[in-house]
Length: 187
Length: 187
Image 1 (tube, rainbow over the protein chains, first blue to last red):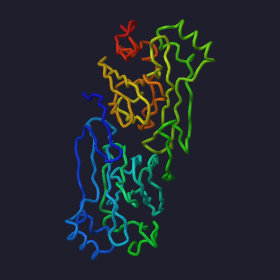
Image 2 (tube, each protein chain N blue to C red; image 1 turned 60 degrees about the vertical axis):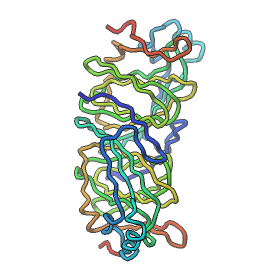
Image 3 (tube, chains in turn red, orange; image 1 turned 90 degrees about the vertical axis):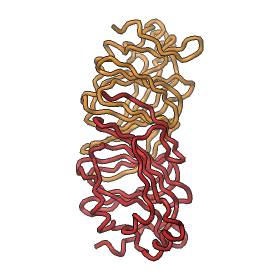
Image 4 (cartoon, chains in turn orange, red; image 1 turned 45 degrees about the horizontal axis):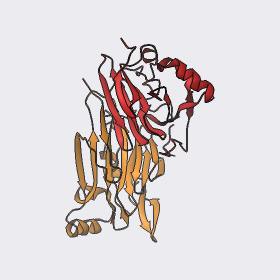
């Protein structure tokens, strides 16, 4: 039987008082998604393969809902801001909610049909991610970007599509500002 | 087709920059759940039927997930703190997440089999509500109690059980402190 629990979330760090799993993504694991491979290889060596983001979750088998935090470090590879892999859900009928706690960033979304949506992430911004929209978070600020996510644990992940083809838009620094540009490699 | 959107949530007031519905519960509508009927009738008259709580939602038909805020006023009826009606979900396989933004309170839960759980609500406390646990929020503080909730819009509500039978526990003020006591009327 499942029992209620209260999990304290630290909105500044993403730490959770109770967790059932976590993983870290380091820069070397994200090589396919950044365009400037020489800059990436340099940073992996010079910065000892830095952590780009960490995901902590609270998952209880038998529940239709689970939640967790994603904490993204600030940083860039060349002029591309640190980003998550980006993914569709395996279940095309399941969406998600991203509720930003601290930092600033961009939530880049792309529908199965190729439409793009760009939402700002800042404290208090609660993003509705409809079913079958791929989503990628990008830390465009100087501090950690922390958000709470909630979805159905059956939603699953399909990383392959975005890993292989990328997304149509890129979020880069240009003239000292955040710019959303067309990807040079996406068809 | 559904499109992503970003909703700004004010954690101090529960206000949402985009909403698809809302309702208010006033004290007179909650008469069945408070034990001290003379105190309730007095307060309804003296305070012009005050608002006890308000629910604001962001719901998009076709999505498996929706969210919103509940904002509870501080107050008591006799020695019982202001509380929500309390409900099971109509769908017994669907849970919920309550993420407290401001204020302080108690989340009182009761399983279908009658087990009780008491969780604290304070900023940063994210409560996991398993499927088939009735839940009621109680504002035990001096300020508004505001929380964000996320669940499946198909979860629905079954208010009748709790409205008619109450919950096994009550949250009252006793000697100036918050106390969880056995209900005098629940079987």
